[in-house]
Length: 439
Ligand code: GDP
Ligand code: MG
Image (spheres, protein in one colour):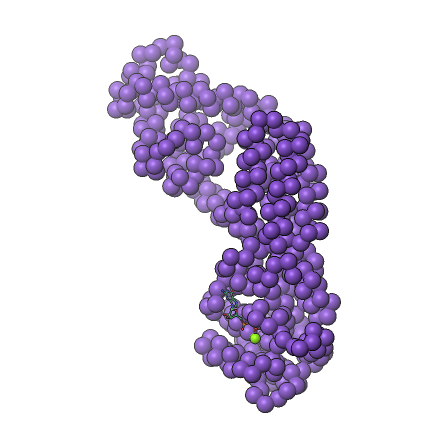
C-alpha cells in the first residue's frame, strides 16, 4: 500500500505539468490503494474530499515540498481516522475492574485475554481470568493452559452450559477475593448470529462489566465495518483490540472499525506469544500501514542526536546557505546512520552520492568535512565567492585537508547549488506557514 501511495505521489511530482488534472489522478490512485487495503468505501470518499480540501494545489510551492505536503496530508487524514479522540478505559487500583471480551470465534479473544491479564499483572494489578465460553469443547482447557503458563488464577466449568451463570459465579468469587482485574472470556460462535448476540447480552447483564472490549482480527478486511457495527449495537464495547497485526493485513479494517464505532483501539496483538501485546499508537500504526517506516521513531532518533539545525534553518529562511551550513549538514547526515537509509529523505543527496555504496559515500562525506575543517571561520561563514576571487585559498585548503583542488571545487559547487536553492526558498517561508495552517 505504502509503495503504491508513494509511487502515485512520485509520478505526480515527476510529471512535467503539475496541473490539477495530474493531482486529481494521484488522489484517485491513492484512494484505490486504500480501498484495496480494506479501508471502507465511504471513508475513502471522505478522505478524498478532505485531501483535496487541505492541499490547495495552486498555492503549493515547488515540487519537492508538494510531495511532502501531499504525503503529510494523507498521513494526517489516516491518523485522524484511527484516533477517535475518546479516552480509553483505565482500570482503578484497589477495586475490582471487570472486563468482558467479545468478538467472533478465532479473532484471538482467549489468547488476548491472557496477554492483557499478564500486562496488568506486571503493572501491579491482581489479575485473573474467567472462562464463559461453554459453547466450544476445549475452550476452558485452552484458557487454563494459557493462564497456568502465565501464572494467572482462573475460573471455569467443564460441565455447565449456561455461560451467564458461569461468568457471574467466577466474577463473584474473584470479587470476594479482592482481585483488581477480572477478565471474562466469551464464546464467539453460534449457529445463529442472534443466539450469539443474545448470549452476549445475557452475560453482560449478569456481570455488568466496567469495560467491554471487542477483539478484531486484522485480517478480516472489508467485513470489519459491518461486524464492528453489529457488535457495537449489541454489546456497546468501549475499546477495541486488533489482533494479528504481525501478519500481512494492511490495517485498513482496523481504521474502518474505529471510524464506524467511534471507539478507541487500546492494544494490538503482534504475535501468538504471551508478550506480543503493544499499546496502540495511531502514528506508528499508520506509518507502518503506509510503508513509511516508523516516522515517529525516526523523528525521535534525530531528536535524540540533538542535531543542530537551528542556524541552517534560519539561514535557509533568509535565503542564505554558507559553506558552514553545508559542513553542518554533512556532519548531521553522518551521525544519522546508514546512508542508504537516509539518502532518500534528503533532497539532492541521492544525486550527489549517485551509485556509491554506504562505505564510499561516507568516505566521500568525511573528505568533504576535512576540507571544511581546513578553512578559516571567515571562509566557512562565506558564500564561497572568495575562493573564486582568490584561487590560492583552494590550494591551501586542499593541501591542509589532504585532498585535491578538484575535490575542493566540487564541494564549493555543491554549496553553490544549495545556496541557489536556499535563495529560492527564502521567500517561501510564508507559503509554507500558510500551507501548514491549512493542514
Ligand atoms: P478466540 O476464538 O477468539 O478465542 O481466538 P484464539 O485466542 O483461540 O486465537 C485464534 C488463533 O489466533 C490462535 O491460533 C492464536 O494463536 C492466534 N492469534 C491470536 N492473536 C494473535 C496475534 O496477535 N498474532 C498472531 N500471529 N496470531 C494470533
Ligand atoms: Mg476462545
